[in-house]
Image 1 (cartoon, rainbow, N blue to C red):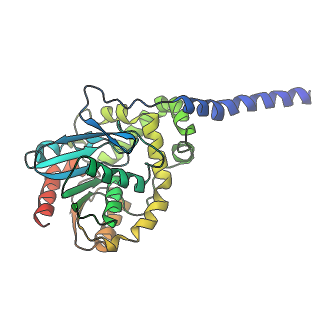
Image 2: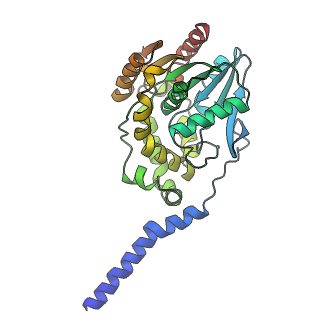
Image 3: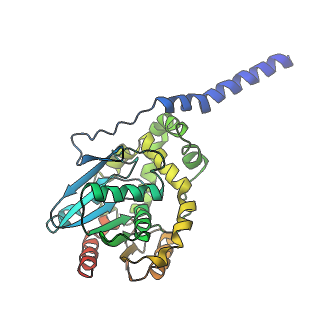
Amino acid sequence: MKSRTMKTVIKISLIFLAIIIIIPFATGLLYSPNNNIPENYIGNKVEINGRMMRYYQTGNGEDILLIHGSMGSVEDWETLYPLLQDRYRITSIDRPGMGFSEIKNKDYTIDGNAKIAKEVIKKLDLKNVIIVGHSRGGAIALRMAIDYDENIKGYLLLAPIGYRFDDPNAGIIDTKMISIPIYGEGLLVFLGPIIGGGKIEKKLFSVMKGDEALFPENFIPFRKELWNKPISMATRARQTDSYNNEIVKYSKKYPQIKHRISIIVGENDQQQIVIQNEKLAKEIPNCKYIKLKSVNHYIQYAKPNEVVKALDELIENN
């Protein structure tokens, strides 16, 4: 009787092991993301050191490079394109592993993203660039600012996350398991259709709170469709998992930044982000700090004209 029970336990354990580990890993090995840009999406592709990156460019004039946040795409700047394209040449990118951009090696890190952004500037021949970074895109912009580049005129940071961040969405499954190479993508092939859309919607509602009327009607449905891909969700998890270790090292160098930097934060954003931005503005020399009343995290949607005004001032003062 005991022998039969033991065999049953072993059998169940092997099935459980196959479901939890072996099948997702095998699926991850077979997984190949489709990074082709559909016809109804904007943008083109450019090759950057063996990886194809999606970018969108519009307008004429001085160069501005836009870097989106944790998850996102070139569409995250849709409110700014019509306001800027008459005076500036606007270039935005899908960060590695996001939208329709490919990812290699450790592109998901702050350092990896910063290097890719610098290569995009070179490849597209952008001159005297103003860098605009939103949220974790602001952390990438800060990493770029630490290494002084005379081809960059200045930085505009929208609700940047520049220090250690307590991500309420990070967890064993959401971050640690999904961040495992190959296995994470395989696991998300199964979990993504079940829980991915709901998690994305919940996160977006939290950062839109109070500003909902200012967003396009399809804002959440569009992003649920574009973001809920195994490669994108796994990239975000890896970024989250490595973020704090990286940012502690880089944040010590903020007082050395030589470029002019402007920061905009909404007072209704997460309290730790507001506190971080106040600290950041004090640590960076020649920094202009703007705190907007009754605004949450997506400043470019809530107050696009304030972003344009800050850009104009930053360019005039350089």
